[in-house]
Image 1 (cartoon, rainbow, N blue to C red):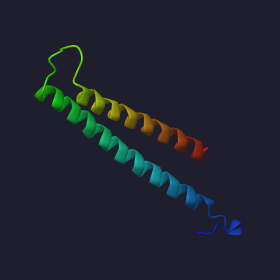
Image 2 (cartoon, rainbow, N blue to C red):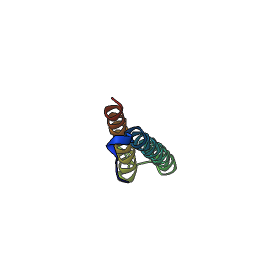
Image 3 (spheres, rainbow, N blue to C red):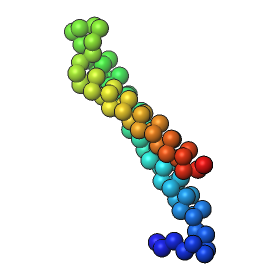
Length: 84
């Protein structure tokens, strides 16, 4: 798409960016929720012998969930910066 400055198409491009950002945030949020649920389920199904530290695979799933939540926060920052 070529941007014609005379016709001011910028609002349409921004709305596309907002829609894409919202879609990405929703997908990341769902994956984070599923990953967290999987970690909790695995922790309940196969508890660690050490009661204070969960298994490596459970820690890995929780870490993935945390990284996805951080990515969602970064998307929020980008969308806020783009809207101002």
